[in-house]
Image (cartoon, rainbow, N blue to C red; front, side, top):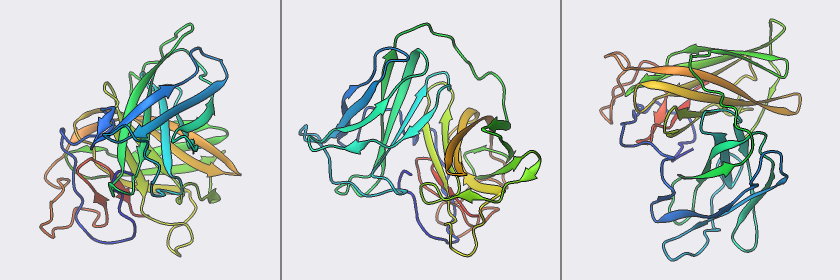
Length: 289
C-alpha cells in the first residue's frame, strides 16, 4: 500500500533494497505515531487509540482512501502470532480509535498505514505495545506453505525473491474442491501482508486485478508479484473473504537471493519474467491476476 499503483501496465518491477524497507520507525517524512494507548492485559476489553501528527504536533486528518479505507492498522505479536488487520475510525479530536482485546500476553507491534493528502504517498508508522499476562511464545521456526482456517485450505506456490521479483500463488480449496466464490475485500479478492522475521520490516502486497473487471476471477487462485528486501524468513498473512467472513491465513516462507532471471530492471524498459508487476523502493509490489 506504500505508493501502490492502480491499474494495469507493463512497467518493470522495482526491487527493494535493504535500506528501503518500511515499518521500522515511529516517525517518517515528518509524521509521527503518537499518543498510542491500548488494553494493558490479555483478555481486557478496551480500545486502541492513537494519532498521526505532523512536525508541529498537529493531528493529520486529511487523508486519502487507500484500498477502501482511510487507514489500515496491523497488530501482531513480535513472534508473528495473533495477527490482526483492522480499520480504526477517525474522531473529531484527531485520534484514530477501535475497540480491541488482546488474546494473549506479549509485546505487540502496531503498524499504521496511512496516505496523508498533503504528502501524496502512503507511509507506514510503527510502535510497540506491552500486554501483561502469562506469555507463551509461538516462534515460527520452519517454513509453512499450507494453512487451514475456518474450513478453508490454502496452499502457497512460488518463490519470494530478495532483490528481484517472484510470483506467489495462493490456491483456496474446501474439502479438496476449488473455492470459486471469493468475495471482494478491500477492493480485491486477496490482501497480503508480509513481515520480515526478526525486525518485522513491513511489506504490503496487493493483487493488481480488480473484481468485476472482466478478467479477475474469484478463486481458486490469487496471484501476487512480490519482492523482498533481503534474504531470510518472512511471515505472510493472506486476508480473504468468503461467505461474508474475513479470514487471515498465515504462512512462513524463506526469501532467496535473486538469480539473473529474477532480477528486476529499473526503468530500462526490460520486462521482468512476468511482465506486469509494479513496485516501489519500499519493496511493495502489486500482482497481476
